[in-house]
Length: 65
Image (cartoon, rainbow, N blue to C red; front, side):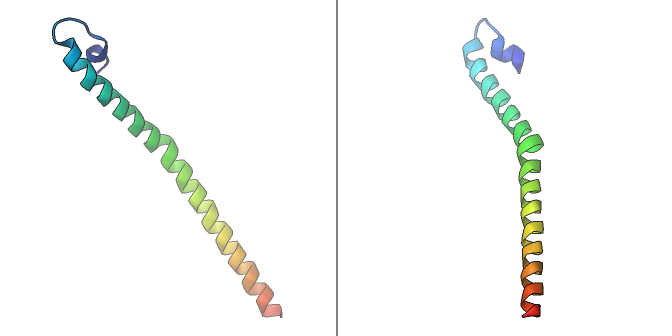
């Protein structure tokens, strides 16, 4: 897509816009797949572990009373 985005000549104006859109979409998809998805998964996993430990502490303290 880079040759289309950077190309000159007849008809380059029409092809340039679609090449820029496709390149941007591919870059965004790469960013979401490799960075955002693992980070969100890790945060949700940590939150689940924290909620389980909080429920365990609450259950053990209520049993003592």
